[in-house]
Amino acid sequence: MLFLDGYTFTQANDTRWRAKTLKRRWTCSTRARYGCKAKVFTVDKWIVQRFNEHNHPKPKRPEY
Ligand SMILES: [Zn+2]
Figure 1 (cartoon, rainbow, N blue to C red):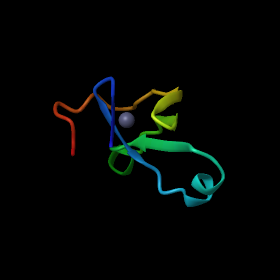
Figure 2: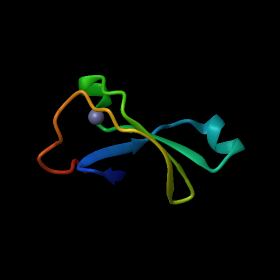
Figure 3: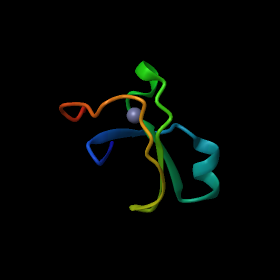
Figure 4: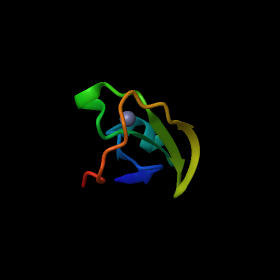
């Protein structure tokens, strides 16, 4: 789970990517519910790219 700017992200289950690179893709944890397309890419523990446009308000509490 990744916590960023009040939103939570879950790691995408993308094994092909992982095999080739350390880059990980995270999608908004409400993606299934709201179809939110916000996502974040990380390499190791660093955020390298953000697409932080959510189509919903911030959750009041982080969803673990
Ligand atoms: Zn979102």
